[in-house]
Each structure stands twice: as C-alpha cells, then as structure tokens.
Image (cartoon, rainbow, N blue to C red; front, side):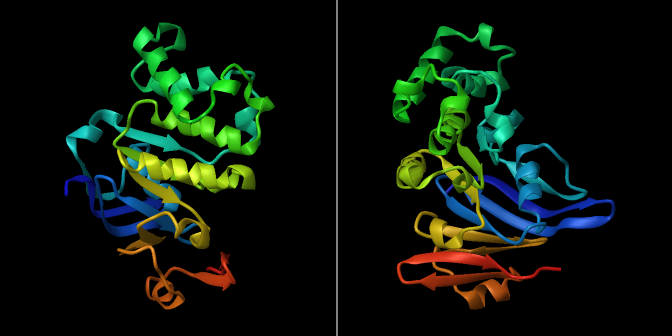
Length: 248
C-alpha cells in the first residue's frame, strides 16, 4: 500500500513549549483514521503541519507526489457562527474550493463550474444550490463545506470535529457520505467523540504531544491510558459517548 505522507521525528513548539514531540506517523491511500486526544494535546498542530501552515522545529514530513505543492489535500475546518454570516451562495462556497489554483471565482473555467455542479449533485444539495449560508441548517452547512473540501478530488481529506454542526437528522447521512468518499480518498478525522466515530473509522491516532497509532477501530480504556490519552470511553446501552478527564 502506498503512503500519502510520512512523519519522521516531528516536533513543534510554541514559546519553547512543545505541542508535539518526536512524532512518527504514516497515512496510506484509503486510510480512515480517527485522531483523538485532550484539548491542547496537539491535534490541531498536527493538521497544520500536514497542511503546510506551520513548519516543525525538528523532524521532517515526506509527501507522496500526489500531495506536493499544497494540492491533493481537502480540509474541512471546525465551523463557527462566523462562517455563515457572509451572504454567499452554496454554489460559490463549493466553487471557492478551487481557489487553491485559481485567483478569483470570476476566473473559474467552465470545467470548474461543471465540477461544482457534480459535487452539488453528489451531496444532494441541488435544492439549496442558490441559497445563502445563513438560510441553512447545521447539517446542510457541514455538507456545503464538505463540498468545498472535495471539489478538487483530493487524495487526502482532513476533518476537524465534523460532528459539531451536524444535527441528528443529518448525522447518519453525513457519515455515510464519508464512507463513500473513503473509497477514493484517505480520511483523517479529528474528533472528541470516540463512541460516534469508532463505528466509521478503521484505526485511531491518539495525540497528546506524542502520537500513538492504534490499528483498529476497537479501543479500550486500558489502551487509552497506555497511550497517555486522558480520555474515558463510557458506554450506556447502545449509545457510547466520551468524557474528558482532567488534564494537566
């Protein structure tokens, strides 16, 4: 199996305080990995290094040629209310995902616009394609921003807490769509909800300054403790959820 990228001894520090230290990590084509860990453990820093937004203080990350020059990676960041106040249409938001290689939407080619139409249809957004973001539900918003992330047909899709804005009516549909996308791209998904994503991911990366890779979607409290990941997995009947312990 081909690796998309490989981290060798990556460390990152802010004001001489390590956010990540001596991380070794590989992601392969069509992997589906859940990234878990406490707040402040380095999950966001990990994503920023992969995206090339920050440079580590030591170590190196080696990319497959499909991820060179910032292309080949789709990114769905955490959403906030500030993301939905600007009066822009669903179609233009999705089309803006092509701006990695284009300068302005008005310069988009016919093929770019055709690709946007394909994504709109794939995600079932046709009925709201002309709507403004402030008219949408949380689940619809997340699908729109997912469309922006995948319009360029990335080899790797990074998701940062994608369940935050997904309401119960869209949750199953959203994760089913990620399963379909995983057939053609690797997915790295940051989440605090082990119980929810364990039904979808195939393995876990536990990040708490260091990184421990767990090659299965089944993970126990004992394993979390061994990985230095201060998260407690609690199951009530058929609905599991997680609680973060006190972390210093």
